[in-house]
Length: 271
Image 1 (cartoon, rainbow, N blue to C red):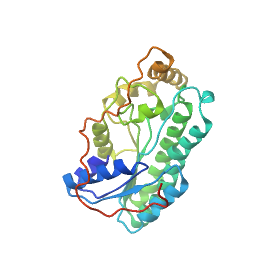
Image 2 (image 1 turned 135 degrees about the horizontal axis):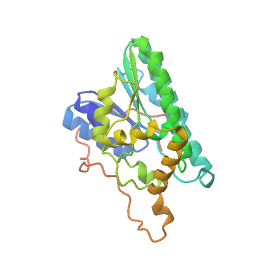
Image 3 (image 1 turned 90 degrees about the horizontal axis):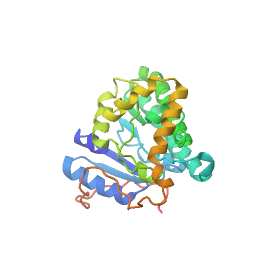
């Protein structure tokens, strides 16, 4: 999403916990597209991180919010770490709420703006093997649908992006293997093309292929998604399976080191 917006000539504020990755991406985008990129390295799973991001961008002319931060888990909920599951709710739901509230009020006052909230195809039914993750994405989907109608009279477009599997590092964090997944670029292009035109977009050919399942009864979708999740986590149940190094295929070469100086937004705390 950052690459696509920079290619369109938009200045950016990038936010995540990984300051090294943010710096590298910011330098690359500034050098390639001539845009200004500012960095906020903070944890959106902490309410102070959301507050910090809102405060640090108060004087900037922000016109679009892309709420893409999130992570997932896999396996039976009762066998998982409750603290991890709670943190996922904070990142996937509470942070999205805080950002949508803060920037939504700001966009409504200025009479223009756009918000893209990243949900998922799993957010349209329960998913055995990823029950809590699917529930967080159901929250994002319904929040986006409501805000789409609420904010339209104020000139603010709200879109839910609900892709299927995407190569983004998500699978490694969730302990999954996705044999078929989309590259981020077509997902970003389709999502941006839908902003202001639709309430929900399911970007990418794989998402369209899986969309047929949404026409089935909800109970059937739950069982189908359970089998899909079982397939993506089968390697964890096979002792002989190879445990190779994790990778994040993106189709891009390594980003160049910092090429140009820039201002840096300071979060509420430094680790």
